[in-house]
Structure formats: C-alpha cells, structure tokens
Image 1 (cartoon, helix red, strand yellow):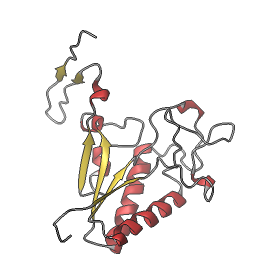
Image 2 (cartoon, helix red, strand yellow):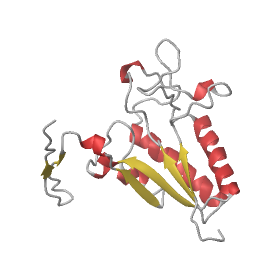
Image 3 (cartoon, rainbow, N blue to C red):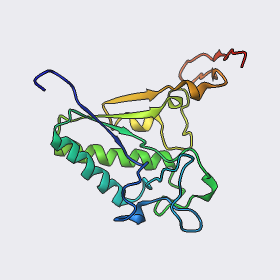
Image 4 (cartoon, helix red, strand yellow):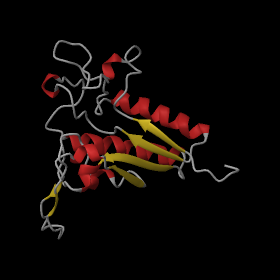
Length: 187
C-alpha cells in the first residue's frame, strides 16, 4: 500500500482439489461414485451446492481480511472438458440452467461480500467466447448474467481457443456484423 500497489487475489471457485477430505459432498462425481476429473486431472465443485457457496465465501473473506484490494474469481463456471457424459452432480439439477446456477452463485457472493466490506472490488475471468456468444456455452457463463455481480470482467482470449481462426456470425439484435479472420499457417 505504501508503494501504491493494487493487490488482486485470484481465486479459483469451482476447480478445486482441496475439500475432498472434509467435504466430499461438494464434488462432482462419476457414475461409479468416484470423484470426476477433467482432462487435466482436476476435480470440480458443484456450483449449486449450498456448502460450496459457504466455502468460497469463507475463503474470499480470508483474502479480504489479509488486505487484498480486489477479488478476482476464476473458474467460476461448470467444467468444460473431460468425460462430460460421466458427470453426476450432487446438487445441480435441470431444469435449472447452468447459467442460472452461476448467476445465483455470483449474486449471493456479491450480496454477502458487499455487506462484509462494501468497498471491495470484485472481478471475474471469463472465457473469451462469452463476448461473442449471447447464449450459454454449457459452462454457465453469460455476460448478461455475470455483469451485475462484479465490477470488472477479464475475458480470457487465448490463441489456443482460435486454432481455426476467428469467426462470429452477424448479430442483428445487437447490430453487429459478421467477422471472419482465417488462421493462415503452412502447418
């Protein structure tokens, strides 16, 4: 603070391997009952489980108490890779949409944290695709749902997400033209 440095606590919300012993009930499972893992071996919390909200609130409040100026939510979504057909959620149930579950989670976080420390800045990392896609990408992230619960959004625009180039269709509702930038590489 004396040097004017803005501190940000990047906190993963749903991709979490740390509560398996004290709270195995928080975790997404496989049909055989084992913990479900994504393609990188990470386990995921169920965003709809009330205990997951309480756990994340507790951890974020610890970061606030340490003195961070901003809390940046990362992995505030449902999983996107791995054997998605073998997922069993402990709490999440359709017809609740995944974007509704994430919206409700973030709204509850924001409501609680604004009381805890009104001046705390809240931000979220989101897939870059959500800026081009108004509908849910099956992970629960939509700009229209998340923007009300955070102060800032960082879109993760990784080149690996655009290996085939960049294309977005026209969006007449928002008055946006179609864009196509092909990826050109001899390999």
